[in-house]
Length: 476
Image (cartoon, rainbow, N blue to C red; front, side, top):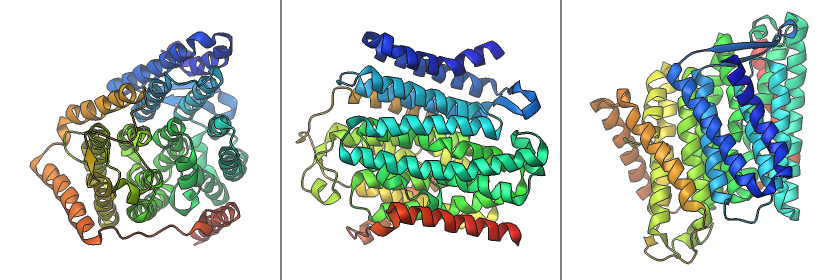
């Protein structure tokens, strides 16, 4: 099994670099890589076994694969496959698929690593691939958004690296387990790096512009799976230290409310999806032990939403009320949105029920409020007009891509029969109904996120404020 895991880990990077030599089969090779990851992730979930592999034991550099990893790996495989299917008939060159494979492999590495240094290397590789994918169009706007992302990411990872060095200094190991012996400075620096990288709370305010201004397939990849590269190590750290677990749960509540609040009033539909991603990361972190299940449901639904936005006649909510979308696109968006809202028979129902049943007593009110907020967010879209004809034709690769993702949403919802009880189903339907009722009262009221908050210089200042706040918590 160790050999299989090693081949799986190396395969995306090897294939990615080989695509330049075989551009005629670039899509087939990339799709094959995604299929292998999907199968491997599914196997980890079904087996519920743990595989540990020491690489540099002296330094604590190691791999750990378990069912938690499996959910993230499966998400990575399915979302990557959907993006490749969406781009199948486009004129994108082998360069694009090379970067997609490198990103896919780097994310797999994050989900497999069990030490801070390997995670650092994998995250930096992923950041470079994301930068190149965002800037693929070579327009001035795309290059600026990519550079902005890279600068924020590198700044965050500088804090993280300093924390990792302090962990090694205290424990003579980079292993996650060394965190228990590290000083509070190390914990704080690592947390600020990962919180920023994972788009959590106000440290994640770089996310709306980055995800909404990227090309459609890149947006789907970023919100569907890449953002979770910063989330996964947080879940691992929460398993080790009770204090870190509490802090992460607190940030989970803050980010769930922050994202959903601005998503309710946002007027740009791609920014609605991006702000919703911030909120949904709160649900992934709210109960660290259950994070993988929710990450899978979110990844499939959010990739569906971003890919489907390519068939909308406009990005503006007010214009969409005048230019109806097609019935098919509306149906696809409705399924994905209802899954995130927790509708029974979709994977989001089981994931959300599992999280809300296992939150601590002091999290109950906030997380249930955020759940109602999610229903409000997607009610805004579900109540938009739709007709048999739309001004914008469907992209050629949209149907195969969303069909794969919707199949995952439905099969995941049906498979988790243990989540179904009269109480859980009633609560889910009641939450969605309450959200729709509130939407009817707030109507078309809009509230735009203050633009100065998203400026680059202010994002660095916000990151510094969060760092000061974490140090204050540590010293109390």
